[in-house]
Image 1 (spheres, rainbow, N blue to C red):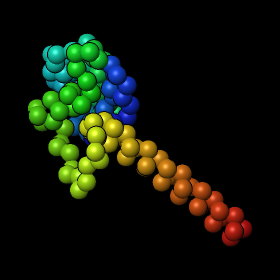
Image 2 (image 1 turned 30 degrees about the vertical axis):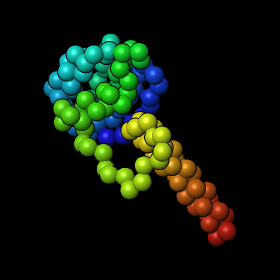
Image 3 (image 1 turned 135 degrees about the vertical axis):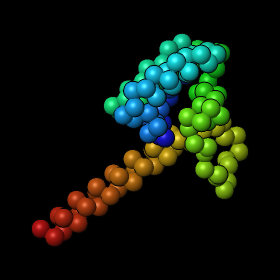
Image 4 (image 1 turned 45 degrees about the vertical axis):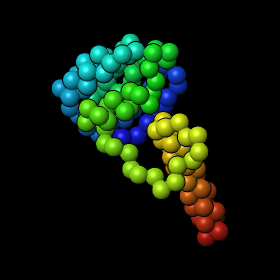
Length: 120
């Protein structure tokens, strides 16, 4: 699972468990739309993407993710050796990982460009 985007009222999650499986997509869509505060869910079996629109005053992204974990749609999070004080949960942690991954990719690309320029 990886988070793609989250803002209050909208969260997109990529799930390998639904990728390529229209029946599981429909099952997940119907189930998530029964959660309190969820207004609409859209699933894409081609990409394995789940888009949830929810009422921010009624529920939040972390609560929906916890419910999905409890139901078995998502794996439990890997244990973290140190939790930062005041950490609010999974969404921020996942976004941080995505950000660090993007920075690492940029650093690698730049290193390869410098290396290739030095060789040629």
